[in-house]
Image (cartoon, rainbow, N blue to C red; front, side):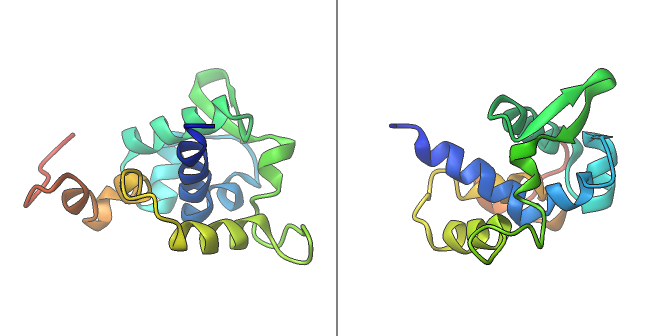
Amino acid sequence: MGRAHVVARTVYAAAKLGLADQLASGPKSAAQLAGLLHVHARSLHRLTRALASLGILTERAEQRFALSALGDALKTGALLRRSSVSGETTLIGESATGAGLSGLYASASAIRGHFASCRGSARVSSF
């Protein structure tokens, strides 16, 4: 229970990025997903591995990730009590107080310039 906020912020990052929608057409590597989502590939790979450990994604051969049955619920338009889990998750995640993990989404979307603000550095040259 002490780490439930980590799980919540991890799922929030996946929902905010729209990972489930990108994986709906089939398995993809973190590098492929990073290109589609315009995010940092290595950070996204860490996120997808975490999601696989939670049973939201499955990791296949050649480090390709696919949606599990649980992950299907994160797709836009998936019904759960008249709304998608993705919509509810992003709403809850944006209002949650997870200051220590609030940079998880920003870290994966480092290419958008958020990573520097999470780390407190003025600029990020490389990972």
